[in-house]
Length: 336
Length: 119
Image (cartoon, rainbow over all chains, first blue to last red; front, side, top):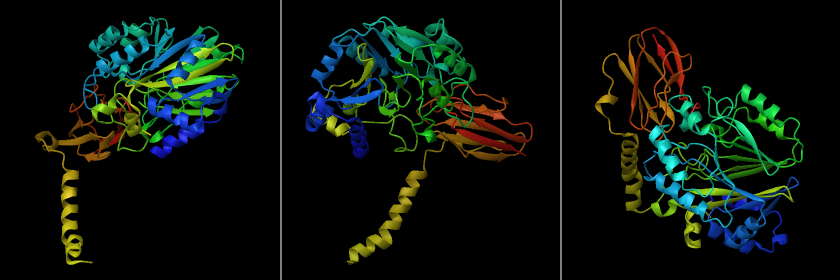
């Protein structure tokens, strides 16, 4: 596991000289952040940077707008390693509220609830009410569509959306598309967008300038991470073919309760941590079920993702932060 | 090899293996796990239906039990039966009155598939 993580760091460490941070300094920052990693997209070329408190603040200061991604709050889950997922969601909201620049909005990439119960959605609403950002965009996870094909989810969080809950919006020149890949899943398959949604997506993107930065967000990863556990979307290649001509594409997903990143051409893929419980790295456990970790390590494995956008460079910087700041020693033990 | 080591290799190791196997294979059997006449059981463990395929006589009631910390469903691929969401330790039963092969899956985790053959 440490080797894998090191590989990930190495992959993303392309040129640190410009940032004035040497490798040793970077690793220190990693230790502080536990899972922190920043990369920016500038004209389609990924440039990685160190993530530290000071760097983080600089990035935020120069950003034209900021939004935060939270994911997999699973309100209603009450088993090890997290008997109180409402409290950890609250911690995540507190962290968002403490950000130096108030985010323009929040994106929740699904699995709001554990069992699609009205009481679970009520609890979620209550906690989210306390967020400094009032605008919250949602896409459903499979846990949000359990009993009624997602009708309740649509009523509460998907007013004015198409089909099973997909939609798009623009923010300061960036085009955001929320996709649903958890509806009508077929036996033996993974996530699925379906024909109707794909047609809509093609139509939605048609006529937009190739220089428009695109952000796609959906619950299940839109790239195949581990098919054995269903961690992918069967027809994502079709969706990605529609964004190929754009200079900057950022794909944000949840579902796997851990950070994974990949850059393919001009498309940067990123999955967020959960605010509820961690899941094992692909293939490291008999199944993708909740990972049981010691209580003092839990907050290092939960977190939020904030994204800063600079109009000048048409670039997006993605920063993951664990809920617990932790001491370097803890972070070392936790993952490095 | 010392005498002690030989003892460990020849006696203690098999004992330990047997002990490990006993522990590994034992989830506490409850009354519901032991099929009554005309009934059969499928366990859901680690995102797997076990046994993945079962063959039963016509008229058998099959009961699925979810042992995972994550909810699952039991849904017939051809729309013959469909459970509600089954959380930890919850069960679903269906009685198969007609012979045939019934493929099913978990609609939440569609990689999970199984089959009931009714003769």
